[in-house]
Image (tube, rainbow, N blue to C red; front, top):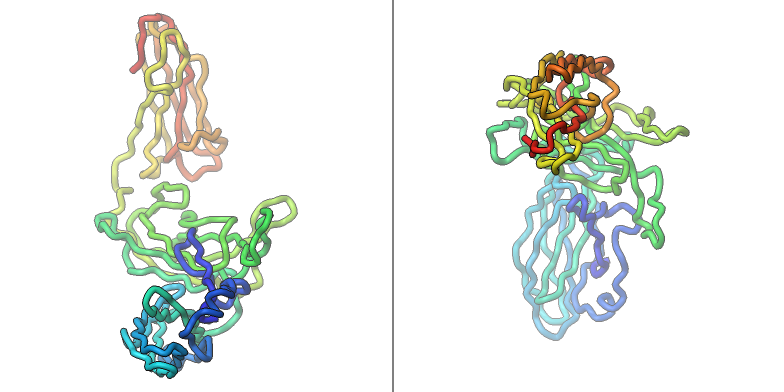
Length: 377
C-alpha cells in the first residue's frame, strides 16, 4: 500500500477518498524495488471528544545505507491537521518510529482522511490515515459542508472557499474502459435566507465521489449575482434521477448538511440599467440584425417599460421577443410591444409571469435595414 499510485480527481483538485474502492493502483515494479516502506501500511484512528488523536508510524529501511526522510502531510478534504517531524534518519537495515498528532477542524464529522508522504531522494511512499469522529451518523450523499470564512465580502480580493464531500454515487459514467472509481453522483448546494431559497451556488450531475473545494465569488452556478447583503444558509442536497429524467431530492438521508455565511458589499445595491448591443456588432450592408436590451442581472427589477425611437428611413423592426442572458427563449415573462415603423417607435413592457422578476432578461428586436448606407450602431 505504501507504494501504490494514489488516484487524483483533477476536477476537484483532490485525492480520491481513501476508503473508496479503487482509490489507488498497484505499482508492482515499485513494490518490488523499493527499499523503504511503512509497516503496518495504513493507520486507523478514533478521535477523542476534542477531535484529535495521537499515534505513531514505523518506517523500515532495507537498504545497506542510511537514508534521510522528509515527511509531509496532505489532508484529504482539508479537514484535519497533523503534527509530525519534518525529517528523520533511518540507519541501514533498520527501522524508525515517529509520533504524530491528528487534529480535526471544528465542525467536521463522519470519517476523516489524510496521507503522510515520506520522500527519500527521488522516491516517495505514503501512509494512509483514517480517523473516525464521534459524530458518525447516517452516511449522506453530501456531507462535510464548510465555508473557509464566515463573510462573502465583494470588496475582498480573496473570496471564501466552500468545501463539501460526495460520499457515494448513484450511477456509473457510461464510457468505454471506465475505471472502478468511475462512481458518479448528482448534487447541489443551495443558498437560502429565513424566507426562501434564492438559488444554487453549485449544481452538477457528473460529480465523482470525493471532496470539492469551490472558491465562491457571490454568483450562482450560472455565474449570475443573485443575493443582496444579509445572512444566509448553505445547504447540501443529494439528487437522484426519476423516470422522466428529472432530478429529485433524496429524502432518506436525514437532515442535509448546513453552513452559515454573510454577504457584505453586494453590488445588488446598484441602480437597475438597460444595456444595448447589436448582433452582429457591425452588420454588413443590407444584413438583418438584432438589437438586444439586457436588463441588469444584478438588481431585482419588477417591471421594465421604455420607448425606443429611431430614424424610420434607416430601418424597420420586424419582430420582438424575450430571451435569457444565455440566448435561450424566455417563457417566464410577458413581453408586450407596440411597433410603429412609420414613425420609428417601439413601446415595450416586460413583466414577470412565473419568474420572480425581470433581472437578467433580454428584450430583442429583429431589424431590417431600409437604407443600405446604414453601417451599424
